[in-house]
Image (cartoon, rainbow, N blue to C red; front, side, top):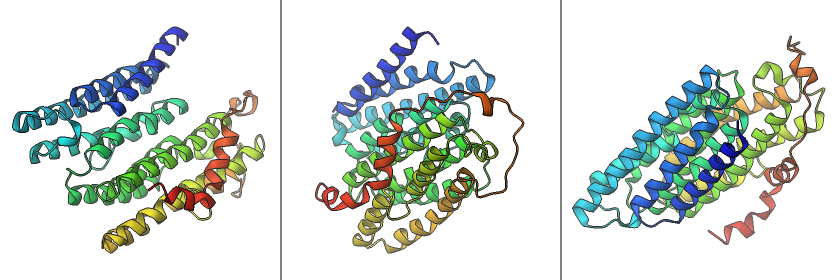
Length: 346
């Protein structure tokens, strides 16, 4: 890809995200989301592979539909109330349309079908952007409008997302698809707590971004795309694979790793809100995700029988390690002791 085109795309991504998260007007928020959509399209399709082109078209169609719904929601609210302010969303139909638009942007059930397919057609670095940076603007809009949205609808979508993200990830062999269903499950955790404690939604998103970035960057370094090739990577990068195992267990939410903190706080908050059934259901559904994270950890530490892969690229590729991996891994594993300090900010 032309370096100038790449620079323009990345700058546009930063600009679009900044506009959306800092705007208080619906039209500006919509503009930022559209800039993001148009900026990421060249990055997804840069390999010119049919699967990448297919992923690009799917992404564009879904995001364009979601943006149109968001704009229609804000216009109908302005028609009814005369308000263009994001925090002044009060019209019931507008709230419903916005919930659907945000669910499509985030890949929540039942609007999740596009997300695993798009991630599978993208490179690891673009998949990381799609899973983290491009979900920040919709999460921000969800945060700003949390007081207006229907808690029952959000809870239903959240529980089904956690369930489907866990179930569908069980029979996958492609790493990017597994991480896509993991992302859908995590979005469910963020959504369920939005109306009760929006700050906790943002904290969960930040920690999810941290852990996901660690996993994606490590996998990008080892050039692992499938479970079968993961077993051969231990002999080449044993230290990276050991830290990858810990990062995956952190993403699963096991104590005493960082990923345990958001799940602990969300279950605690749901219990305070007398939503014990929802809290128990979410905790039980996280076991589904734990199974495929443990399977990934098993494969990464070659505790399964050796499996030869007839692919010369696996043995001859040069793998410079990203300088971001060590600090990200440290934070992914060791932030739980700082939880008293984090709790004071909520």
